[in-house]
Length: 178
Image (tube, rainbow, N blue to C red; front, side):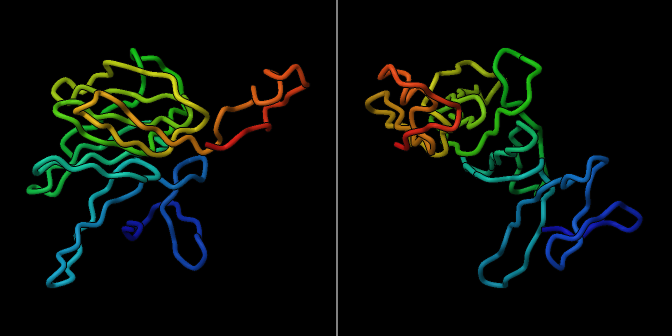
């Protein structure tokens, strides 16, 4: 990632200084654009914990899990054009955790691990147009556009209902992976 600027608050991550915010969390993430022939790297600052990238033409979309946002990057200009919220209906909640994405036409499909949902964002307006329930902690997806089906991997499966659906006591830490 990028090196901290002079005069900012830092903490060590192993042996490396990382710029932090007021609550000691990493201040931002970044995307590396690497020219394969020369090895030249250009860093573009994004939101915190960038963890997925989807590209359409000269635009890259980067899921920032800890900011509940998606950075839209103009690859030719090598800068963030706009930041999309990964929240449904403008709700002011935190913890959506966008972490995997796929573009189909003008729609960006987003796995929101904290919401247990598959979000749909209209790329022209940047607004959420759908929020579909999934299993517990969705982390990957493939949209088969010719069949209008989304396949979503849920890392913790069915969630805490695994035992209670069988009439047994349950707890929030029970899960069944899928």
